[in-house]
Image 1 (cartoon, one colour):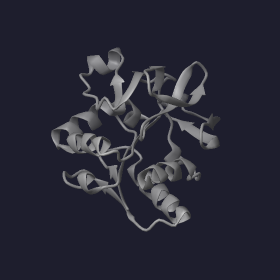
Image 2 (tube, helix red, strand yellow):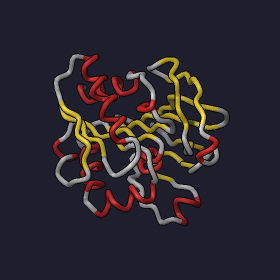
Image 3 (cartoon, helix red, strand yellow):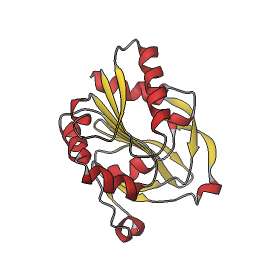
Length: 197
């Protein structure tokens, strides 16, 4: 198995490390590759889009043809997971900030997104969420977005306060928080199991 982590910016190395750990726990032989180059995502069994600055990531993945490869993987039924800024990029409906910054979205999740829903960097926090199919999970929120509304076919996996913070549509996972910044591999294991289906 090969999992590609889009290595434009954000917690790229953390995603690589925890995905390797999840593979080991599940007894899966394979590799996890951080990439900024065209041609790697297309040869993968799953793709992870880390956090970072969504406008920057969007500009680079569309410029370097990585976006079309991610869309191709989703079309093939391969899993795609976006965390924090990655969730924003997966959304179909952006907020006024997305429109103002002219951020191009992948539109793989039928959700309405709100950038910086919980405030700026200094308002970062950690909370235990009850995540469907996972159980209690220590979620780290850093300048996190949130989902205000979901369309048909979107399964809500977790909520916090008045917001939706984790969803799944087919094999597309979107998380407002950072599972890669914990030692808990269960969300990455869940993602890898989708790749095995």
